[in-house]
Length: 168
Image (cartoon, rainbow, N blue to C red; front, side):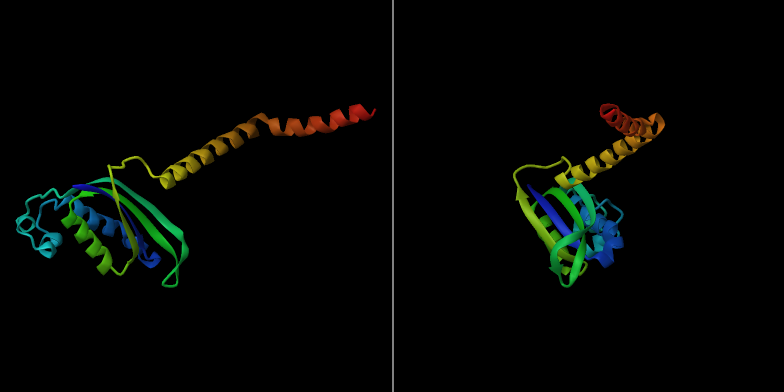
């Protein structure tokens, strides 16, 4: 089995369907979880129809980047919902995923990259979002601390006094 990095863009009008789409693609990669539901009937394989769990691949990283601005309009759309997946699967599973992307009208673009090894650490986009959230938390703490100390007001009040002392 090989490692792949997949990014797909979903039409912004279909953003509320992204969790269901991700779950459907997760089931394609990881195999059926038993039960013999719609996925087993649509797949048509004997193993899935009997409800036997079939391990086809592994998802190492799954990130929902949310709705973001596109670099250029695609079909007169300026924003899209981004999803990143790092998976390990066989060629048959990958072709099934590509086909699912191709025939899903909500997916406006997809990119599949072959990787040498599994990538499990957060992506730079996810890291920057976490750091930004951490920075906001620290900034709020600093503002709350300055309000209690009154340190900012003291610094402003001392400066005019120092200037008037030099003139006199």
